[in-house]
Image (cartoon, rainbow, N blue to C red; front, side):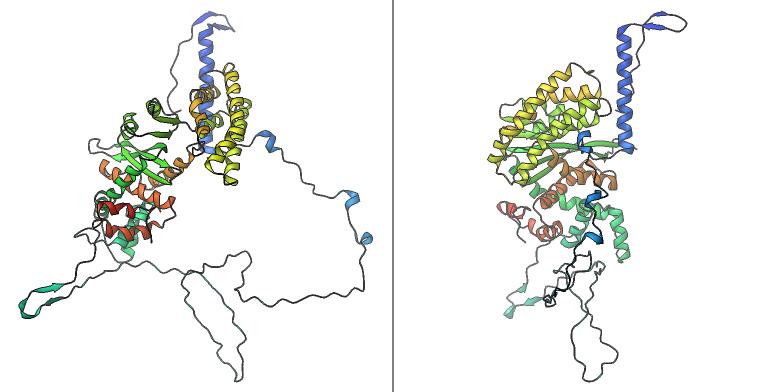
Length: 508
């Protein structure tokens, strides 16, 4: 999509006043171009007007039973045919009033962990002899504006008796020598930009309202120093750990970079994402290119399973004897979802079969099955569906145009068929790469806010920060608290102590 269709020449065999006869090859090519244009138009309409969700509901499931809006005549009840007993005494037990705060209609109780600032208001006049019988309590959430303050560390010096020298207390750990930004401010800036997607220039506007004027080059320099000098040490630890694990998911996303060699233009670089869904770890790596050399170099000594989409740059990884190359069923499903406008009947048939596979995955999750139990469930229920799907693909391939949307969807799925089936080999393996796509999503949101990254070095620093913040999220760690705690510690930590500062090992 987006590329102009190649022009072609029609070979006219004969021509009369109302009829033009062309050769079969030109006719077929003309039909193919019409199908391509229809598919491209449908896809553009979907992007502009359609839902971004990929959920699929078959026509059969759309036919919901009608709800009766009226009772049948014989079921109607009236006052005349209802027996109402009379003269029966009614009794009830009155419950004691609850001591818990009343829950307002439809409103959740305010969080108990929040600090309460209590204001007690008494009546203007309380007659003598009045007795307190309770209180009406009304709670509201309030906000205290952020504060930037200066922390002064004063270390008194003492001269020892008899001129034996001078003593002074040791300096507490600092984030970086001579950096005026403390750990809490750096944590706020980093989390605001990379988690809350608040660009630096907007943060500077907030600081300005608080009475502090900073410029973007200063703040950008802080982020660069912290990531390249400190956080890079933790990043390297994650890289070592991930490459020792034996099941990883891989994907990549484009990102625009300012390049001094391209004046007035941006360079399209790539953030490569690596995710371990079993041990809940993730890592981002920046590279200037999407070339196959990037994953080949990174996974040169890796042994285990890699799950990717159908991008050809990953093909050579699967040719290595020590790597199991898994494909992504969600990408195959996406192809059929996109071909609904081209061949609705066949697309729906494929989507229904894929939907059955995902029902099995949902069952395994709802029943909280172990990896071994999930493998057994898949072999029992998913394998027969996959075998049926393969027969369907082989049969329908003969009846569709290879370059049509449905033809491309069938070919894509058949070309990756063995890799799509390999998730049956191990219960740890996922049916698709959706988990890693979820890790990339915050980057996509961030790109819409900061538009581009200032340099290739800054892009790798961004990869480092995204890596560590992603691992905070995977392990339910508050990234602000984590950064405030570990930033002053990294410089003083020994090599074997760095692993304790990683989010999955960190203790508050």
